[in-house]
Length: 313
Image (cartoon, rainbow, N blue to C red):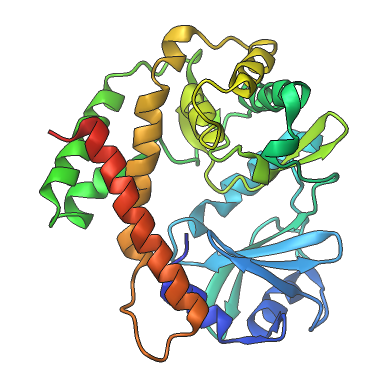
């Protein structure tokens, strides 16, 4: 997630759903001013155009430098992924100077189809969901520029220096991850966030988007994060795994590590949280910013308890 100061700064440029900053960025794709309409700010700022989404982050932000690899990965998947559109200069990623500083940007075609909520899923679509992720793993190109697995954990001792128990627990998670095999059967290019919110469905065909968290990691870690909203023992989990195994193997020994991967994902979120909470609350803050800050702090308390419950001494 972007820092709260960055989210608030972009929000201050909005006039209705338009933004002078977004207009400058969209111009790199030949889009006239006033067309890009604000949708949300989270991992990136997202504006809606007809049939496409404009996404951008500050050039110095941690994900900015990886957009080129992400765009190349999405292009390589063809119809299985939403496709980035070349700019007027023929580039998939542009660095654009704006009044708020340089940003890295992509314009991504809208994925064809509709979103499916968990309550609407059913066993057949759960199987196709699993099969779609298996194809992402099976068909990934070789990309050296993607980050390695759970790199944020390496910063825990510096970022969370005042919380010794949490640092020790994250160190235990990191040590356990470091002992895992990384052979081609269990480790490779992963999507990073293959949840239902990042998929569009046309019948049984699935198109994935939001590859911002793509990395070299364990395939079972990708499964663990994709299924994080399903209750334990859900028949949809069994259907998902059946669909996955219909495309490529997934040994039970790898699946047994899913609690470790879930803890690692949670720990990584906690390491990133201080950079997100980069401003103190102020009386002049708009209500939505106060609410967002409160929710993030409350979630941090909950996530810390989960990590300590599993790995705390």
